Length: 396
Image (cartoon, rainbow, N blue to C red; front, side, top):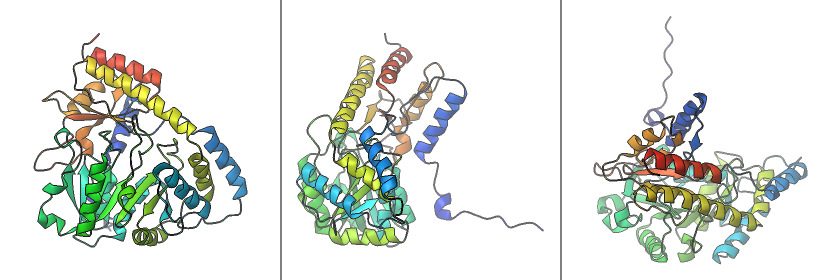
């Protein structure tokens, strides 16, 4: 008797490889071949999590030994700490009881949030290039993504006025992400003002992914909630601010009705972030010194890498913020082609082709002419990468 094959869902089957998993695979292949790889692929900080965070976690593991399941919405102490930090950082007075909820990092929040607001056929306005879970969370919630290209010509800001009326009638969520991954753009106040008003006038939820709010090189970036709470949610993460990618801690805050809807989704999906992890995050939020040290390290690495490309005659792509360099390539140079050149064992540099984290709009992929470098190697490795890049491009 022949067993009937078990098939995956059409939804899952429609997905290609997750871009950053594919980058990891390529890097591991080079390492297995003995190539001294410099990996700019995945945005995972390689610096140790700060000692104060690790100590807070060690202490909390013992203090919470009998704690059991954490509250679905986060322990009160964490929600109060997040609200207090929002007050210090942005001048926002949030109610930790109704306007803040903990998340298992920001990826979980981004992916699950559409489940609270979409019906089949609803539209989510998604920036491209951008974080893949904006689109994939929409897909799993039964919605459709309408992509908004971010390009140098529009200053890496979505053209809200250019969205067709037929799309707007079905739109339920607009995702924005500033400081922006991967472009490194910081949105001006006028954009936030326009985006908040645009969504409020049309009954669209403004979902603002602010995971990179603390990695900046000029004036501190603003928060979308500064222009109003009604119909606005902001997503924050401890991952990049405090090198806590392994801890999975973050929060969503803003409109209390929207927070309540998101909480209802989460109580049916997960059992919350471990309380001792939330205690570690509280320790991290109480300290800004380690964040300033990391900012300066990212600045130094940014300057080294961008100088190598400028010396080679490439466009100046120095970012204003984030831990990414969205390097523009010479006209006619494809991102996949360029990344393959860097994978040559004589070069050994791994980066993410811009085309892999962008979606085509009207037949044009806005990431085709870009490569994303995550500034996670050490300073010494970035200096070595600069030398290899100059050599690859026949520069001295």
